[in-house]
Image (cartoon, rainbow, N blue to C red):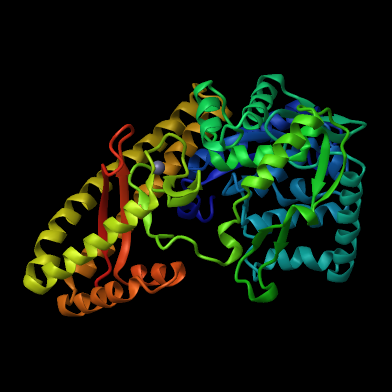
Length: 505
Ligand SMILES: [Zn+2]
């Protein structure tokens, strides 16, 4: 009977099918169909959603001779599943010892559960006995050496110009001599060429994103293109037939005092680039032209430690819930939503002035009518907001169930399902964040001390003018929890709206 029943309900799963050692002589299709039936029943009983099935028809001992396993590994590394369902642990991990290490690590690092009808394995749980058992049968030292050797093998494959990661936009993954490389996917490649051409003509990433979206293009893992996805494509040498590595550096949990895995994007000088085995989509001349413009427009990332916006982390788009960003356009800083076409932008200084005006007015109200300002009028508005948000959350829950139904009925194929699901999930995240913010604001307002808040606001206003951007940001954070920004397109420059949630304590 199922174990952990309540914990499995609602999980998204990949289904991995492979013959066991005992079944080696039997007809593959028959055996896999039988297992599939058993596992689908199990999934149904436990409320697990099967998103995709990985039937291993050809199966060798080496990982590279198990195409479905390779595909599954990529998908779990991207965090697509909460768990993988299979008949027993042996189907998953049987093979050469070095391959076992890779497979188990992928499950462990992505915190994906392995679910068999008999037992649930959680490899990210260090004290899981089963994992300890597995580890002893490949002694730790041996495992490490072998794993390192395999990684070196993989590195060699990359250096030889093969492409081991997921296909970038514009390409499809294919195998040549059983090694992975890319082939042009013309329906996407035409948009890639367009992006490069438009950028060379002087268009910015935001307007290119808008244009490409309007033509019906979709990136691989999001609903639409935005400034950063376009920028990433324009920067990528893969489109002139190159292979790049060392773009990202991974710092593992526990190293250098990190409490989680961290990814750092390296500067271009540290990238390693070789000729790939795949065909280019744009020619070198156009690519170089685009790189020259990009270098001139290069805006240091927000991770360089210097705060340029006093409003960083404070203003959210009321439409989509994303943080609004400060961006310099034609020498003038603007505040804009990262999502193309979402809401109109405003000159940064106008927003900053409005924030200070609001604080000045609140200070006056707090001094004159301390009791009203926080408690009564503020929470009634907030409570209505909370109520609306909670209703919308309930409706996203219904949308999710409906999507699973459509997938099961075969109305949706997997890419459509994923795309729709991602949209609903994003919406849900925004709503959840808004609910938390609002709830906290209500609690804060109820417990607020008007005199103390007035004192803090006065301090902010007195010191604002003489502070630098980082200090201003800290000052504002001391009294404001979040500001929701809204502006309709084609309205006057000052026709934007700000909703403030103060942090009175
Ligand atoms: Zn937005």
